[in-house]
Image: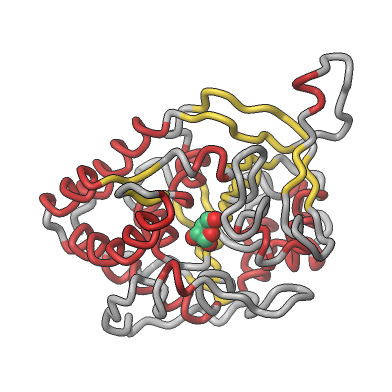
Length: 316
Ligand code: RIB
Ligand code: CA
């Protein structure tokens, strides 16, 4: 499985990247960075830190869009820490990004490997939207897009009905959902039920590898943030779900092929993924052009156990 990741590396992105690198099913072709949790260049440096930690300095990292297409920059440092890695202030990676723009990296790899690249997006969709504008044939060149973003029924996490990755660049997300490619959407409906708990952290601690030791310290701040909002001790492993879906390691219990639109109007619904569920309620209502498989239920507990096992087993 040839994966091209696009991340705003942040805490759960860092876990997702490590998980992809720990997975024998995955060939990670490259990783793009984008604004979102932190600035695009900080996200790239955080990605390089993860790559350095697991000895995968062969994977190219491309810095992407520094801000949304139309809107001002809005970061999520409260959730992920000032450095994006839980205020751990890890030493500099000593590594450099490739110099290619992340959108160009998407276009280049899709052209070089037509029909083979799975684009896994765990961040605002600005790079992907720019890539679509640069190469209108992109939807036919990419195998599929698997993204962490949006929500169908679950409340939003940055607004009443908006999920952060879509909210941080709704115009980009609107372009991506409208393009004629196969999309699989892991939104808050499934990621807010895929919660890492203390017993998972204990297993990571007990593994005592350079990667697990680092992840345990990186996760601490994020875990406390989520504990405050959830009211019990846990944190959401949003981005790993998208990687697991791409790899086929997440069991899909309920999903539906539905039209998805993005609200780009200012106001309380800004950034909402409007998922047209009418075909589910009324069998005679067809939804022409539906091309997004929206996840409603997955085997979250089994996936978390598998995720933790993989992370523990990755010894450099
Ligand atoms: O809403 C969750 C998403 O927003 C995750 O991708 C997290 O890393 C943040 O980017
Ligand atoms: Ca992310």
